[in-house]
Picture 1 (cartoon, rainbow, N blue to C red):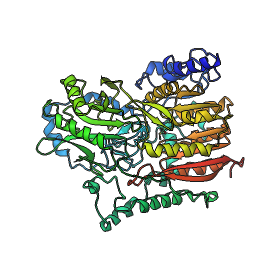
Picture 2: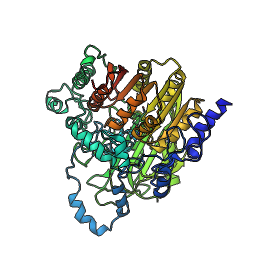
Picture 3: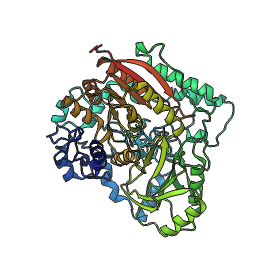
Picture 4: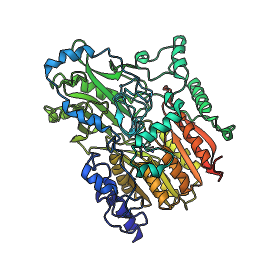
Length: 609
Ligand SMILES: C[S@@+](CC[C@H](N)C(=O)[O-])C[C@H]1O[C@@H](n2cnc3c(N)ncnc32)[C@H](O)[C@@H]1O
């Protein structure tokens, strides 16, 4: 009976607005999952206002103090920018004026995740991101949930969804007196800004000493990649893999040694046996060369010039071939590539994701208009050339900002998602959900993180920033129950399905801002034994960290793709009574300047240390 109820709750939570309680009892209608948007992540003001007051972490109805982020929609995007979407197509007369501004316009900064700016982002993640990063290949796609096309301003990565170079940090709530800020209606971003301002050094650098490395490149041993200089993502191609790992270890040490108790507790970095072609996700930007031929590739570092890329040393080879095939098909199907400066044309980006364990392949054609001529023939021709493709999706992005994916999509072939297997669990991955881009290292990362959590089967675990539910679902067999929270509605939807397909009944998912969610839990007097947290590159928030401490977990396992923000958050947690015990760097992004880190902290009860 209990089993059945648990299962029903997990499935129904998303569909019916979460009519079940965390304790298994049915609750009154309170649609917490509607907060900030509908199931496609669109803003829905009237529903939002109504539902906002109903959210409770355990599903009970209450008048909530939580506010939605007024400056962004539920996918973490800027509402301002969405207002300009209507200007997407402009008359050709204005074209000439804009053309001048075009190609060589130097943009500020480059995409977060170590990839040439708006090149091909990865994440994820809501990253993200998936995650976070623009249309290029930001390594992690961790752009607070949206993929961006590579023009990140501060170089911070995001999560989940790729963004075109727009730094999405500043969206989460911060501030010393969290509850006061909520009730006084303060914009979340101002809290984030305050936190970032107090930690100025944090936002400036997040990669291994990038500048000095670029300088050193002149003395490198050999060039392995023809695009290396312009793309700028793989800044360690001049080193051997072992030397690169040493550099990353040193960077982690440098950022975290300010935590004195960590001396002597830095473990060797977990590297890859074969550090090539590890990326399971590619986002290619489409453009025209001087002769008007379609090209695709990544943004040149620091600009919005597209560098045509045919093969990349770190990307999945099949994905590269599929993108090449699409490029070759455009002329015969009379499909024009989109020109972002004159806002004319159709094909903007192509995103390819391959599940390494199952072999399933997803192709997402991101177009500027819903009208894709001969879409059936186009899809058939693509499938004929690559029978490995299991799903083709058209995503319509009429926006003028740097986000890669728009809100509307149509499945042209297959299921509309792919499934992959990690650590023995099967996961459904939708186009907009964050999914780690290096599955080989992800298994090592998750196994180590769960081992460090030291679960005995009796614990209540929180999996914060859970994406499609991966870590919490894998850990669930070792815990009493898991409470997972994630902001990206598509990822939450996937997570609920993932619990079902793996027959897991002790994990509950909540679509909410993790900081707000934990604050509510703390206000309710809830407790947790272990906190697993894996925030976007911009790190966590003061609100989250303070509320986390109030929940009193004995252990906190913090997974981070940015040692700089990790170092910042660690110092906050120290003051809240947590002591860092071990550091495990993991090389999730070989050849880039980025490194993932796991830290385990234990409660030592010393407040204001
Ligand atoms: C680095 S990813 C980790 C996801 C997951 N743990 C995994 O390993 O696949 C960070 C996740 O945090 C989510 N996220 C970003 N900001 C958030 C917020 N304020 N509250 C909750 N989730 C958030 C993103 O959508 C993304 O899925």
